[in-house]
Every structure is written in structure tokens, then in C-alpha cells.
Amino acid sequence: MKRIWIACFWIGFTLLCNHTLAQVNKRAIVVLDPGHGGVDSGGIGINGIMEKEVVLEVALEVIRLNDILFDNKLDIYLTRYTDTLISLGHRTKLARALQPDYFISIHCNQATRKAAQGIEVYIQHPNTNKHSELQSKSENMAQRILLEFHNSLGFKIRGRKYANFQVLRETQFTCPSVLLELGFLSNKEEAEHSRRKESISGYAMVVLQAILNEKYCRK
Image (cartoon, rainbow, N blue to C red; front, side, top):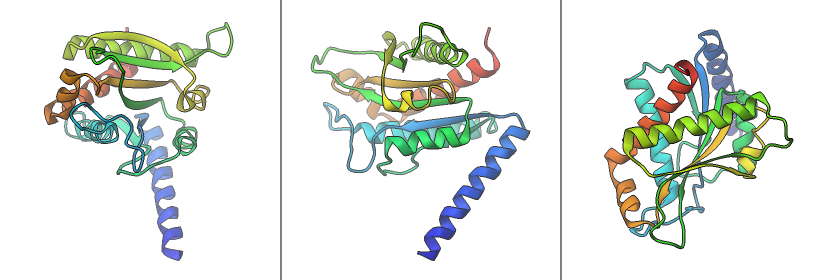
């Protein structure tokens, strides 16, 4: 038990130090939330691939590309780094603790209609008729991600949508937050695409580029 407490203390201390260093260096802080995990596989593709594995691979690849291509320009944290089930409440608690510049929850889509294709990005329903600054930034990030997927990878774009998902609801007053649906595992073409290593790198690069462009190159 003592070792567990020591490990928890060290993890917390490391997060605090890295978070403080990122603020000093003015690096943008990003929390990526690979959905599902552990006993919760999420969607299962028509070819047998599991959503929980695809989204974790994408998130880890974002970290790798941020390191090797951009010299860790972004300070990136994941809500899970392994095949572990983390509660939705703990995922959003991490975001509220880190106060990031962006929170992006990553999922894969699924539908009864096998022909359904494309990329969707969800943001939280506004609580009032008045747009807040965070709401506008969430909308801008959603649009940026959709644009990058269309321009860079040629995906069909199903648009920006509104929902009341817990991870969005509980982060809406903390930072710009979106939920990305990476195509349909129920579609043969997109499921096969998501099986390939080069596709995972492509997804990750688009997510990374969307964040960098929105944070540093917005026009």
C-alpha cells in the first residue's frame, strides 16, 4: 500500500511540475481523452478492430509526432495511456486540474446503416442563448479539425454537432472541448482504413496539426 501511495505522490508531483513548466515556457497544454478502455471495448468494427485500441493508438501517436516533428511544442496529457477503463468523471477531473488550452475526446463512430461514412465533431450544447468565449473556441476547434480531415485526408465531413456528453458537459467551463468521431467502424472501407498503421499516423497528424494551427496560426 505504501508503494502505491508513493507512486501516486510521484505521478501527482510530476504532473504539477510539468504543468508549471509548460506555463513558464508558454506551451499550450492539451488533454487527449482516448475513449473507452479495459472491459469497455467501445465499438467493434466490421473487421473486428476495437474502438478502444484505435483511439489509444491515435492518442499515443499524437504524442510521438509532437516529439519527433515539433520538438514537444505542445504539452500533451492523456486520460489513459494503456488499455484501462477510466471513469468519465476522472477523465474530466484531470482536465479541470490541469486547466488545459484544449480537451479533445477521441472516439470512433458506428451506425446500423453500413454505408454511413465520415467525420463528426461534437461540442456541448450552450447553456444559454449567449455565446461564451469558451463556447466559441470549442466551435472553432471543431471546425478546424473537420477542415484538416477534409483537406489533408479527404474524409467526408458530416459536420459540427451539438450533444450533452458527460466529458463535454463537465469541461465546458474549463477549456475549449470537443469530441471527435474518427469515421465509422461499421463501414467496411473506414474500418479497414483504421486498421492500418499509416492511417493511425494520418489521424494523429491531423489532430496535432489542427491544434497547432488553431492555437498558433489562427486567422
